[in-house]
Image (cartoon, rainbow, N blue to C red; front, side, top):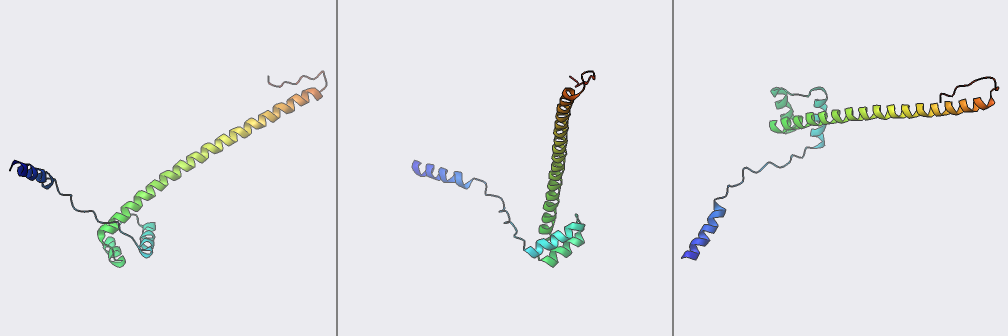
Length: 132
């Protein structure tokens, strides 16, 4: 009997575990038409009123929750894209500044070479400063 009790206790461990919460809804696969219409609306309206949301949801065959979630995700994507664009602009400014600096350094090198050449070609009584 003891062996049976142990087996019963063993089974109870599994039965006492919490059951998983509600299963998450699977990812919605929007049609190209739905995405096109949602994107079109997003171009001029980043936030929807409840009435607008109802109208879009019913016209596209979506639930209010799907429309809410799509707009939230789209605003988050826009924010990420804008931050990435700012980083790209800053990087371009830095690269441009480095390029300009290198060109100026190159120009200075050419000027120094010209000054040395001129020093050799100039009359001996003329003093030329090379900045050394």
